[in-house]
Length: 313
Image (cartoon, rainbow, N blue to C red; front, side):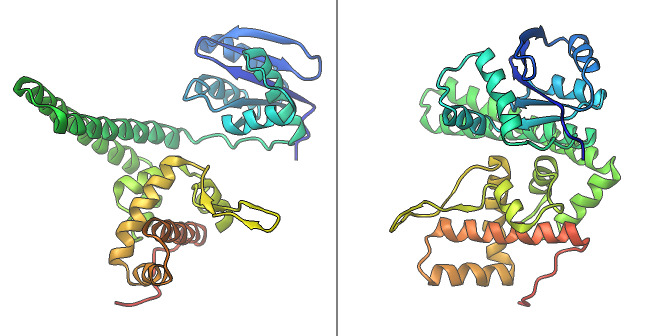
């Protein structure tokens, strides 16, 4: 176990990063050119922990520089960082303030380093994210088509939809080719697709966005997947349990997989029927099926076996 002697909080922007050294209290700013970030990482001892937020991809060059030099880092959820700031009484929000808060958060919570991302999974994640963008764009254009009355506008929207669908097909072919070119990804993809409701698109999302699958317990998997019901009780009041947090793309993929699986797999179909018979609303039942399916997938990868239904048709 490495004891981190110093914590650096880093607020990431597009063109620069602000760095707060918790030991000295100094804050400095550097640009985000690769050579500058690499020089920054080179000067850090491996006992330093660098804490920064997930910033929509702007943090990737910093991650690459730190990984190249073997410097550990913790990438935290922006919501958690903001709530930590409020808990300490800090309501202001500037780049320098955020860097200082991240440094304090790293020390107070004793954050564990984030495992480095495998390059093959990183590229898969980028491809999967791009496919999601195209799916969203197709949905948006389809909705616009339903509202358009002008003939030219409708023709233009249809042409746009056709183009987006071609790009989506090209992305899916590239995702499949990338998966086939890496034996470990291909193995995971084949195993996940033995489960009901899990096709190529959903399998690629799980592989890319949830590398912890198979390496955590069922509660950890449910929390990461955004499927863990959160308690909301106070005194004698019993609030309604809701699922929130976690990784939205994983939750959406598993919701779709659960909907399909609960119609075709005997075990999951019976589970859903029991929930609905007990008066559970449709979405609550599907979320429960998704959580059960995620538990099954986690056990499959952990124990190294394909899907085996306990119920026969």
